[in-house]
Length: 349
Image (cartoon, rainbow, N blue to C red; front, side, top):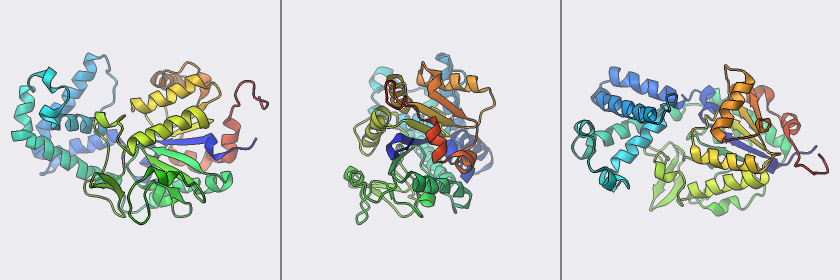
């Protein structure tokens, strides 16, 4: 059986880059907790951090979500919403802020704002690698592109530059930015000639910035990059995010035969909904989930199926491996060909 570029859809989560030295979201929280105790610049925000974390955990507990992970993105989502103050859509229904929050947030919520900036700067340090030697395992996408010989779609929830810096050395990656102006336009994805990958960064990138309400790409890591944390941005009509979400939906629903998920924890509900709808509509569609797990295979499938509200467990293929091991030891054209299932009634069925 031959395989086309559109047959494969790749989705990366934080686990895809952890082997390159970029910490997972939960590990970032652990480091923040060390900084607020040990580092002078962070100590003033210790009580504020404790209040925010305990409030988030309390909210989860009320809903019976006692095993909900607490990570840096959830922390930043809450901070972003609090920063809006009276402009928050729910403010008229809330009445007043919690007294303890008002004490810790400072005048005009200045402490919240400063803490937010401090975390964002630290996030840049964690995600922006000084060198990419440890990320060399991404080279497997170079050989895969050569073997497939057609344009493939890659979606990532990560802000890092591992894919473009490693794979981009030998393959042409379309990122949506015009070469001359560095400005983003969706039309740049229309011309597929000579390109090997379309890269869609669903939550932004550490080298994106806004000028005059237009998105640009920098040649360096930006001090205040365009990243998505706020809940309201997840499914709005703001480009490129709405455009990328639309392309993800089309690819899942109409094109892909295999959705290859690497290092994703299924924590983004809007992504889960798109994948779930496609799986429940198309019985031949398969998800290959790559992540290390310490439970049996059936239990891992059930865990993922619950997240995706998936009825048919046969549509899940779980690979118990790190991203690095999968890319360097397992991932190739032949592996993917073996996993493809044709639709019922197909002449190849």
